[in-house]
Image (cartoon, rainbow, N blue to C red; front, side, top):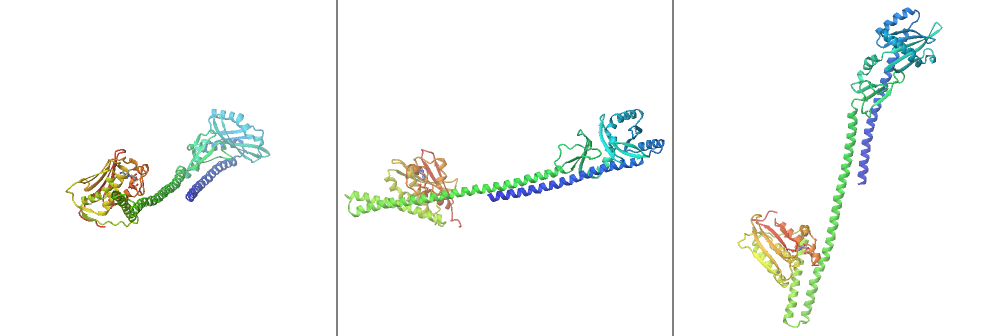
Length: 503
Ligand code: ADP
């Protein structure tokens, strides 16, 4: 049991580890993919910025204005370009905006954006970014300090964010979207691209852009993550069910084994009881026989009547001894599986009659009436004569022992039961009867019931098991009908047969 539990636990752990490893490897590749995407996007933004920075020439201010107005109009990636002198005054501002909004932007830039850029701290050719919301609008500003003809100036590009979302992102994400779910969310958790992942998948990877769009986050998850985690969970569950099943089967096996052991122990106890009972039963009649035989031999009887009485006791006890020895021998044969029956066609009525006569003396001596009612005109059938004699003797003996007190009666009947196609021997008494919960058990070998314990009657618990074995060997059955306090009726069904059944 312990070994099975350990094995079960180990296999469950192995399955768990395998599932975890699969998950870890999927997680890792998803993470690597996410980082690569972020890197690629940053590179696209930075490279574009650099290309624009390279285009800025300040040799001829008029030419600059014309050129840049064209560039900003044509290029989708840039929204505006601002050039500031070394005193941080705006020298040029070119934007994709009509006059009025342009003024607004100029104001916002000078008052709010410019201080945030901290241009005075910028070293020459140092390229930096500012990603921030102003009045609910997200700005990505890319700026650099340049030196020309001994004076410094600053170039600030305002990146076209709608362009990034609508053009640059789809371009970069497109080929991955078949296998991955990708989304970009802003600082408020709103999805700017794709759909937010809710509830977040276990395999989701999320990270901010490190230098450019650093207020935003990219989220990525394998498209079949749900199925994968589902599979892992299902696998875990099925492993658990398997281990549970195995443990259950082992428990069941153990319970069955315990029941068998208990049964065997009980059988052994019953056997020991049986040996003690049989020895006791043999000893009692033997000592009586011996005592009365000695009295007779010594001529101690007072008269003829006493001598007859002694002789009758000897006969009665010898009968009882013979009956007991017959039972034990037959039982031993059955136990060894050697109970061979001599099945012969005959008249069952004669056999029941003879068996009744055999016990009549004992029954009547006990002051009990023995009533016999045998149907005439019964068909012959096939049976073992001595076995069926034993059946009658045992049933009558039990009725006398447990069932009937002085003045009572034992009724033996033999009838034909057309419904069952059998002859039925019934032995009925009007004794205490048998409780319902005992009705099946009394046919078990060595079982001695309530009546035996209450009346301290002698016995070995094999009589009824013999009766049952004999009835079954004839293809019949034995039943008991009883009501507590109202007597018991045992019925043995012997089927009507034309020929001996082939072995
Ligand atoms: P034994 O008589 O040696 O105990 P049996 O197998 O013949 O063994 O009977 C089994 C049990 O059935 C008896 O111990 C007794 O409790 C019960 N029994 C049998 N016949 C009767 C009966 N006619 N009335 C009441 N109880 C009976």
